[in-house]
Length: 164
Image (cartoon, rainbow, N blue to C red; front, top):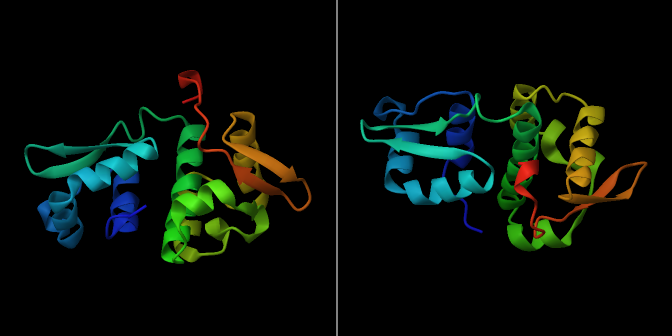
């Protein structure tokens, strides 16, 4: 999976409810040039990226339409995908084929990701494990060990719309 340039910068601004305008320079230029790529990635994460005809970009309903749990799940997956891509891993193969130790994830150890997680009030391993348990309850993950927690993602399963 190819991720668009500066995806993290765009996500950070948009997830805070900001509108990205021409004054935002490079991020605006990249969004303007490759809007369909960004829309596809953000859509897969549960966000609707809008390209307004007046020349700016924003997430439709970024705070109003998503429950706290949905934001946490989407951000958890976003961080995992971004981390895999940054480390040169095949994102699709890694998501579907790897087992992950919850205590070895970058969500709380990498400063950038830690900042993202703080935006959804996740600041410790217990809270991160709660997201994984929620993913398991919804059929997105299978917990393979409890202490320390290990899991596999089950993202290729259809999930009923009532869970979203």
